[in-house]
Length: 398
Image 1 (cartoon, one colour):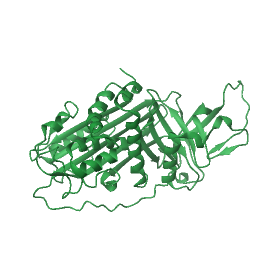
Image 2 (cartoon, rainbow, N blue to C red; image 1 turned 120 degrees about the vertical axis):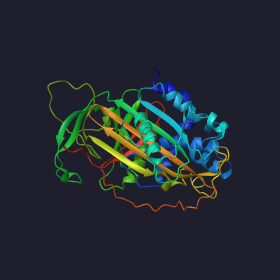
Image 3 (cartoon, rainbow, N blue to C red; image 1 turned 45 degrees about the horizontal axis):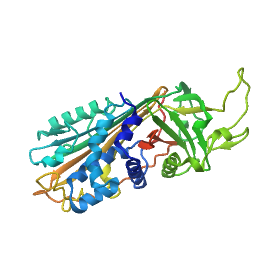
Image 4 (tube, rainbow, N blue to C red; image 1 turned 30 degrees about the vertical axis):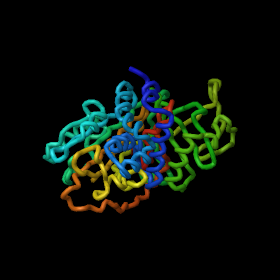
């Protein structure tokens, strides 16, 4: 089995990684932060769509994905093949077509092997089959395909991304309660504690950032912002600092009495000599999930024309006029004493445009105030590829 560094760097160039991370930033800029989301889960689907699109629809998809037509054609199969041999990151891509559309054989030939299945037209049967695929492809973390099968669906494109890692230094489970702040009302919570090297903590004026290393080249990075700071600003600051930490400083340089966000340096006695600066970390277990309507951010994700029944052009995908009628993502992330696991299933439903009443796909988003104390992101250590981002709404309770 190859390492994730070997396989991902074979499949993705530095420019590809930057393009995928740029899509993640664009999606976050377009909406309020959620408990967990994956721009990387959307990115290969944009490439798949782009290979079947023409004209302005194709240009919009390629621009959002940051890919040339040639790279868009290569990326999906290359990623699936590369990640098939890693233990920490897995990606599956699939397409299901109904009888009302005739897929272009040149388009399907570029898809990963065995990626094409059939829709029966029986909504209950199709839902059961696609739910089973979602569960198998994420190791049971997500047990359903995030689509509304009561609506007309002629084609489904889906990705299933999963990440699993074990901490190099495990945490210890502890019981915690909070006297003040948004978690004071929760009573006993499931806390975590560990002693980690001070080189894993960086502090700055607007963020304290702790990197929790896992095996197989996976890092989970926790970011704590100033009290009351807008969540979106904390997530943006965490992404920026993870890419370029130069505007923060390592905690190993702090002296007794120094303070930073969530950090206090004190002195205590111990029965053994200290060999290196260390950080006593206290955090919490979390198990967070989100259901997202990807079309809420259709423009920054390159789907404005693709989801417009009158203007979408997928002439290289199917013989019949089609458009993206649904695009949704379900995510889940679990942070425990021994490790971390997360999964995202992203699905796009396409419908024949001919003979269907025109729909207005502009959505009204109801904003919710997620008053959470810290953000997180999951990245591939060697390349910096961001796989998941999120907010912790509440810890697990006892």
